[in-house]
Image 1 (cartoon, rainbow, N blue to C red):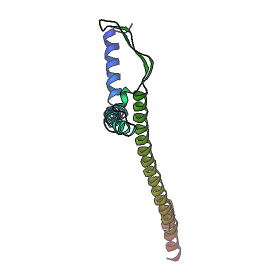
Image 2: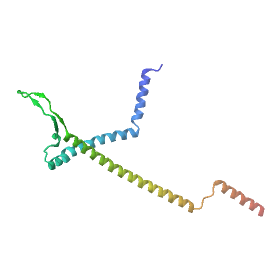
Image 3: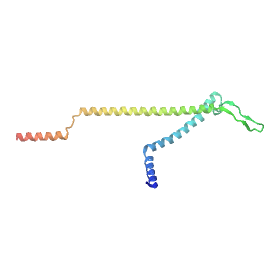
Image 4: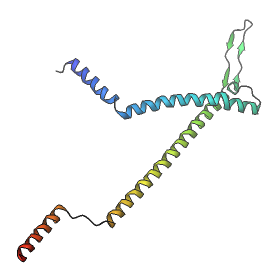
Length: 162
């Protein structure tokens, strides 16, 4: 039966090997950057885009733009008897604009990335074609066997003539 300490050490070593691989670290950096980018786009939507839209449609705060299904009912003491039931259109619109901005940035990033990748592939293909053409133009160097056979032939000629 395996010792539990050995199993734990093996697990820890395996985890260390996994976590130190480059792709895991790259993924972690990507998640951190994506989180920060999400905060930036949310701020852009909530603090810039939505107030501008609200200004043009005449609403001061779109996040409070709701469709009220049931109004809030208060008693004489000011306590809520029946809570407000509303559809949060403004919050929903804000989330949609946020999504569209993120999707647009991802689309543009991928377009640039794929464009660069295709240009690099075309450049590599051109270099390979040029190298292949250069090989065809240059005379092929004789192999070691061919050189050795040529020397033997020349020695035999010299012996025959000599």
